[in-house]
Image (tube, rainbow, N blue to C red; front, top):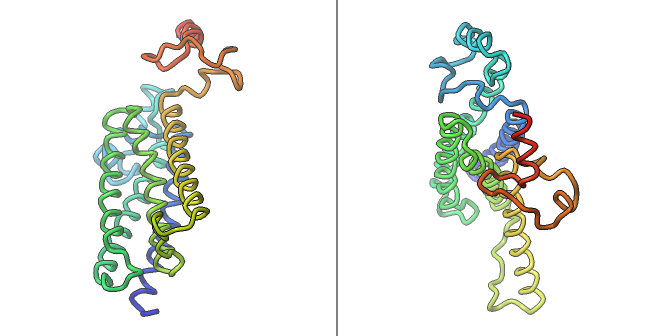
Amino acid sequence: MSRGLRLYRRLALGALLLTFVVVVFGAYVRLADAGLGCPDWPGCYGKLTPAHAADVIRDVHAAAPDGPVSLPKAWKEMIHRYLAASLGLLIIALAVLAWRLRDNPRAAPAVALALVGVVIFQGLLGKWTVTLLLKPAIVTAHLLGGPTTLALLAWLALRASGAVQPMASLSHAGRSTRRLQLGARLAFVLLIAQIALGGWTSTNYAALACTDFPTCHGSFAPDADYAQRLPRRARTRHDGRR
């Protein structure tokens, strides 16, 4: 293995590890209700760090103690952005190196360049997540961007190490191989759908809309108010608490 390919593989593995950290920390930011800890983008109240905007953050928190803004939440949000920005730079470096190694079949420059586009779009989704005040469709798309980036980097790392080999086409594969490939592809589509539905449930705060299992309020097809994304019975209780 050449020195350039070894560096490429190390960059891919490093980016893969950093992506995992970014995805997990992003989930932590959401669970900590810190997604609007800094309500502007890319800085925090126009500053590079929450420390520079500490006075403004304290004033906002004092005015709304139960609101989404506080100094600890601002730091969580900004650390996530710093990690994501570092990942973006690392992926750009990976794409540049992949292009320089484009004659090597292990480099996969087209996938590496596509990954740059994915990360740029993911950054825009991160911006819109904040500026559009956690709009469910944007937050869900942003959530899906993390596993997408992780999967592409995992494929690049495996390709660079020689672990990924071209699969036999369905037309030339045996019957058992075709069934295995079709089953794997179907399972992959179902997995993506399940992740997307889980994200959509979370971003609409609908996890407790059905408090029993496996039915929903005693029915497998409850009378639901889809405009409000809640079963009608849960919607009535929700309105009563407001």
